[in-house]
Length: 170
Image 1: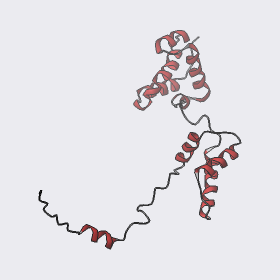
Image 2: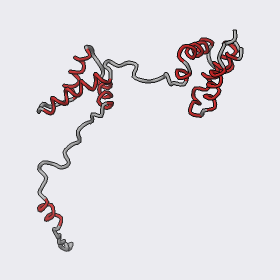
Image 3: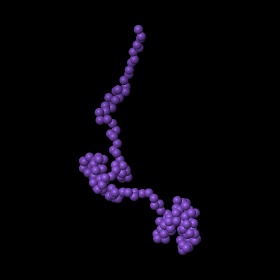
Image 4: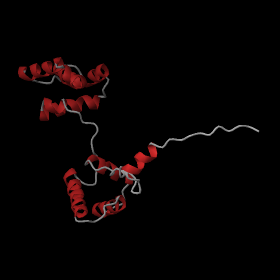
């Protein structure tokens, strides 16, 4: 069975094949064009290295939602999250406001509060990823030791002249 496409759709697909920015999606577009030319799903799959079901899925996606769905990366992303980005921001904002009132904010306290908010056990690694995602970082250590000598003492110790005595062997 041949896929019936309008001339406008065929032109749109051919132009997307010429666009270099869509290079990662060329095989998806070729699935649709080859099907409109009358090739079978099996022949298209063998030619492009897709399974028959993948070819059918690409054609169905195009027919339902258009070219924009075919030219979009579908892999990756935050598929296993406990809170949305907005909920994470709200959680961190609440604890930041607590720190501004004088409370100490430690990772242990934040981690426990996060697990209570989520309602289940989570990993510290995932929690650290959350903090990094929102720009939180470890505060750097103080720039100098609290018992460091004053500048005058340091300068005086630098300007000492040491005189070596000649030691004679007896």
